[in-house]
Length: 462
Image 1 (cartoon, rainbow, N blue to C red):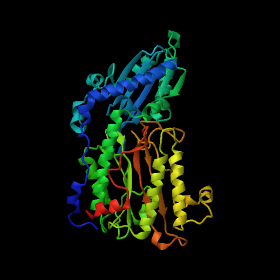
Image 2: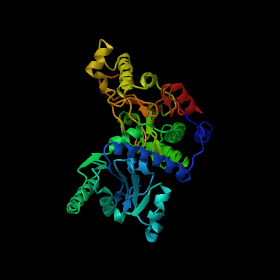
Image 3: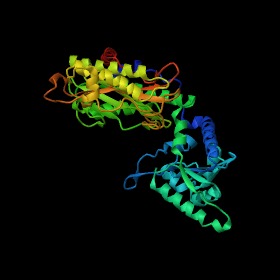
Image 4: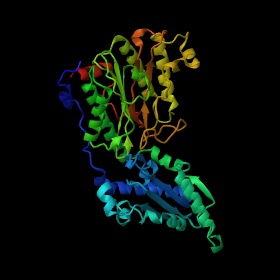
């Protein structure tokens, strides 16, 4: 059980960040080159299709209540292609059939009065140079610029169905160009979804992206260790969450990658339980699913541990089943495999464990799996791709390749029921790590925070 000085001693156990974090501004030149190369690859693909105008929006600020906006974060495809961080911005790339390109960034103008309240804007005067564009324009000139760039091109390339404003603008731009038909100007005759082409690039992370994701994983691992060493019976879920958030921001992460899940006791069996005001009790488990976002890239870690620092026999038995299931999934995560392969491997171990713990009764493992009886205690998939989005581009038909990052996260959730031994009630367990796919097998980026029960108990006793 944690002593009163546990939050002080934890600093000796946190791994140092490798290498030192740098603000995004310091890396602007590197980022500009990186984004330019991405745009060139996309332009080559558009040229192969016959050319067209790519149009991607950063998105707009969303009002939380009255005149108070949510923190802004650009659409991931826009961020991937430009690195530009401000709202109300658009990226345009004209590509002809020969692969010749023009990149234009439309953004908000400088505004001395608004900048007093909201911060300094880049403005069109500096945006082109800072972000590697051919030119930048005031956002007020967006419509006329798009119409001029799209003239006589065969297609628009856009984020289909992403938001209503874009759909409305595409119709307006096409109508304006069709109206110029008598002047010998043709309008694009089709709109092509640009998402899949960008997704193919985003799936494979380059070395800079991998470095950023490693940093994010290190920060998140430190946060989980901090939470473990802070927790003791009587602490509220929101207090434990505060320890995570402190570590994220203190280490330089700009945000959480998703709403943190901090779930004690019966809440551990609720998959997406947000931290509330319930105090965790002695002999209960805490399930934390939390990760930071660093320079746009997500981390995603889940750990489950006892509030008092010691697993009960029933908790330990169930926990070891999930550890074994995760290892089976890790072993199945290899180049050429699909997301379903580690899932299937984890399910076999979990179903056998459920039978061994007398949670389900079947004559054979195959029968337990085929019947779906295991889904009562394990109802989600074992992983998802990770990157600029926590549930990143890629799907169940995407084979693993070097440079992809996926999560590996089996679980076991046992709710109170008359047919379940009481010592297993309210045991919810999930173990999640981020895995970089390599030719040598998966590299687990998040193992700076321990998984094995003995190691967790050791850290909590420190």
